[in-house]
Image (cartoon, rainbow, N blue to C red):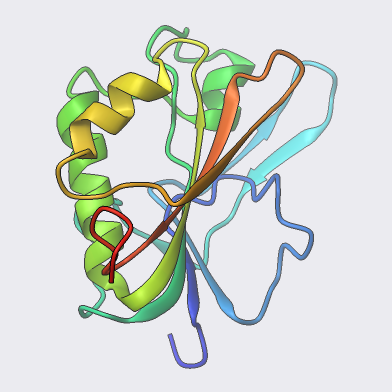
Length: 164
């Protein structure tokens, strides 16, 4: 973990990273797998470390930045390419996401930044924010994607209701 100041808590195939081998980043996921997609391309999920984002093995205040892009789909076939690419939420997704936010904030140093990505194709961002609204509030955000369903939110540890 030496020299790693950024944690990607569920990196998957590192799709949105410009540098998929960023030396400052610890890439983590619950799975390590290689899949051949229907068009013949390889999908490789190869984290530096395997862990469950609900219970991470790092000391408190370990990272300056945490990226949290958890699975966001409930209704998928287990062997579908979407499931292979993004993972599937458990039926306990509300509890899991709240635990994930809590863990991300725990390992984030004071006034560190949490980048959260969520696609609301099946679960609206409002439902997710209700799970965490009493503990964490985003400071900025942006919608992206063809239909604006992907949300990028930024949180800062230690800011409560926009105040330090």
